Length: 429
Ligand SMILES: C[S@@+](CC[C@H](N)C(=O)[O-])C[C@H]1O[C@@H](n2cnc3c(N)ncnc32)[C@H](O)[C@@H]1O
Image (cartoon, rainbow, N blue to C red; front, top):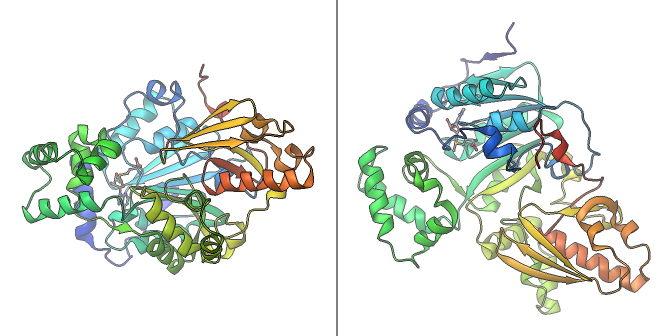
């Protein structure tokens, strides 16, 4: 008996949109797939940002790490994502769905070459696939913003999610893409199509842009690698359907589907207080009095780093578990290195390089009573680390920790952070 069935009775979901997507991702499979999983991922110690073992503390900061087998759905799993995640997380079960037979053909090759036994693939519109089970975790990256009605994707995720389940979603933001979107409008006006001559034309036009043209800067800093192969150019410049979001619109869309942001998967758009740390008290109080949505709107504008918005969502009724909508209880947190951030300890000083936002920070823990390494390894509570501080030193220390958390240069959980590396089936050196 099959573990799923296809619901063909659903209202026709804008078939043209689905046929276009199927055609595009069959003719130009994207992303350019991993050829050798061991060499390109395991040995290089690379992780998908949504990897469940790696980011457990971000998915469920309210729960202690557990080795329980999770049921995970990847909606729109592309050419390699499901195989990478299944290989890197042998302790969980994965189902990957995609419209593109050719993308899935490549994933099957990866499954065979790597003896992956914890992944099943289904070729269809994910919204038509009915399961007997619900999922602990649903991953959908770069998918719903291509749907005629992205809400139908979110509705499906909510219906197929366990009560305490979480969803990782990546969609495009509407700020940083402004200039390249102007180029796309031009290409549409010129009736460019998804073919080799259009790809060549786009390469020529983009190579002629002034180096300071915001589209050129975007290409050089964000998507250079992607544009080095035809499927990347098609995916980026010749897509027939795309939506770009302000965080406010995205929150509204989630709300309409009884979902809410629980956490951010990276620090691209969320950091805020770094911009106001030397502002007047009035300004700081004004910002502090704003709603979560208003603050996020400001941080999306100030960071201008929203090519991708990577969020972790949960059901709205679990709002109390959202670290975005609730004050962080510093008395109970374990802090940890943030993804994409480099740290250097120099006696009492912590030098921090936020590679995601291209920022440098110098944090001073001048009292000699703090072991800075403890702040970064997720094994000790902040209260434990600060035991030897006086009351005033403690307030100062807690403010520094809050600042680092708010600006995504320090991660946290309400439980010790697990060492995810031991889940790799191949040891790295
Ligand atoms: C931009 S690619 C991203 C692939 C993958 N998520 C990743 O991050 O590598 C989008 C993928 O979603 C698939 N897709 C889009 N809409 C879908 C749908 N309604 N059902 C199943 N797959 C879909 C496409 O075929 C394509 O492979």
